[in-house]
Length: 204
Image 1 (cartoon, helix red, strand yellow):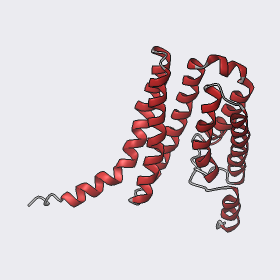
Image 2 (image 1 turned 90 degrees about the horizontal axis):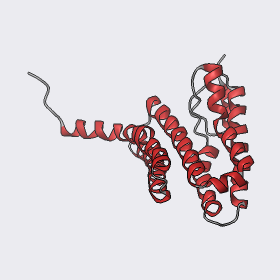
Image 3 (image 1 turned 135 degrees about the horizontal axis):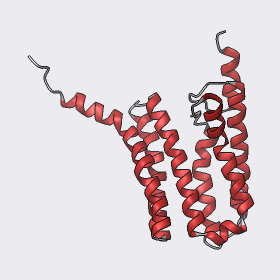
Image 4 (image 1 turned 90 degrees about the vertical axis):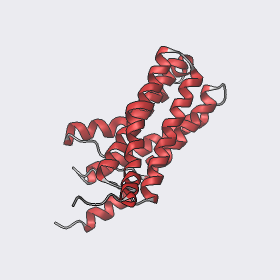
């Protein structure tokens, strides 16, 4: 006889896959559509709605993965790629829709881009994979950085954005230091102290 269908098993399986589905949604739909919207329509409102939706799924997939113990290696990689896609879409939209502000602050934007993506470039060239450390610092910056753009883009002070860029540079330095301390390692690593502790206790 074929095995009986279990709604509980089906429900548990759906819940376990929900964080990955949200990451895929952010990676292949929300982030690209936000960038296309900025390019094709020039609508700041539509872009901001889509970009905020992408940020919301970033928080929600992590929350669900922790809440239902649905963490996985695939989920971690999808989350990382979704984060990078969202950042790229955000930078594209801001450049297209707020060109004067970007032109005025271009050294800061360039510094932020380099600090954010340097670990991606290093990982791809050095190990043919992207480290997905998901440090506590990086998780905090995922919310701090967009929030500091609000006053900058809507006629307010630029200082919060400048502080966020400096913090992003420090975050990038931490990630690069972890990469140098643990060559080839691409799993989760909350911070530099944890990387040093991991290296000291790693079996030879």
